[in-house]
Length: 337
Ligand code: NAD
Ligand code: UD1
Image 1: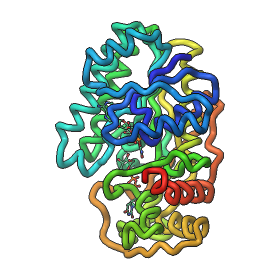
Image 2 (image 1 turned 90 degrees about the vertical axis):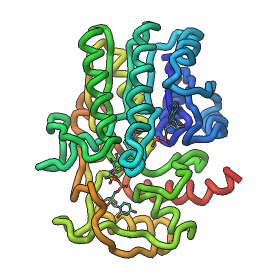
Image 3 (image 1 turned 120 degrees about the horizontal axis):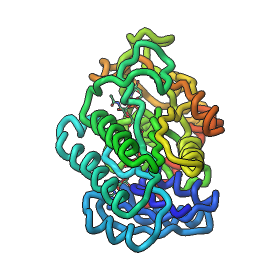
Image 4 (image 1 turned 60 degrees about the horizontal axis):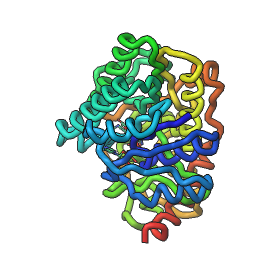
């Protein structure tokens, strides 16, 4: 399928572009490079043997989207482009409503006008908030998010649901990611935060490589097995394969589907530190500090619907996630230099 990948130079988009190309899809990437480098596209080419076209531009720019969609008859859109820093979304909420919500609105409008009727959307497990029961299935009720970033994901899900009702020929997949970590095993692509990382795994990796002095563990008094937060970490390559499986489902016919993309296994902060130390052979100095506002004690997925309906299942374990993150962390500096 000819697939337009918004945000395809970013962390998850680039790994998904690789899997799409390896499965024989034709990929065109649209990215404004606000949080990515153009060289990522060449590295996708190194991995797959096919360098996708990169069109630099902003999804909020309707005339830009018209030019892109007018030049190629796309069969589907994979929509990754967004801002994703939770803390920043609290400080600058309107920026998030603009890029994430207005950007998605412009994109969906353009799809309607250009007759593109399939979309895979990057949602987040953050829509489940602080659930009463874990693991969460897709039938677990969504909760009012605790931050503007989470609200944008919930609102875009609704925008796409409404669109699929108004346009019954559309096929929509809302993919709720748990905690993507890891990197491609080539060491050529991975997560490359511009600023100090917000999320646990990139922080651990930067402490291990002595870019940062120590990790703060946010709370050891949660009602969990070691007192630290439990999350469902998923290897980004498994996540990417979930997207190609969802795209295959969309090709079967119209409808609107929601899938959890997680492993179904929870890992504590201290367990992840231990696993990373074992995989890298490097100590990760840490200090226990107070809880981070807005954090939940535990969140992990029931991913059985995706396995049943998409034939997709995460296969890479925490050790693999750590090994691949460490390889990428060691290569990343050289690649950017
Ligand atoms: P990322 O920042 O690496 O990728 C996003 C890409 O979108 C970047 O390449 C950026 O340059 C581009 N972009 C941003 N604004 C744009 C605009 N206006 N026009 C065109 N391109 C634009 O982030 P990621 O981790 O790859 O996340 C991809 C998607 O997955 C996002 O929608 C994010 O909210 C969602 N998500 C991520 C996580 C996670 O932990 N990484 C978890 C749940 C959901
Ligand atoms: C966070 C966001 C969530 C977003 C997701 C992916 C919050 C409240 N939630 O999820 O909306 O979808 O990232 O971008 O920001 N931790 C530490 N020290 C650190 C960093 C994290 O101890 O320096 C702990 C956290 O308390 C948590 C776990 O590590 O228990 C994972 O944190 P993180 O990687 O930020 O992901 P989430 O909080 O699950």
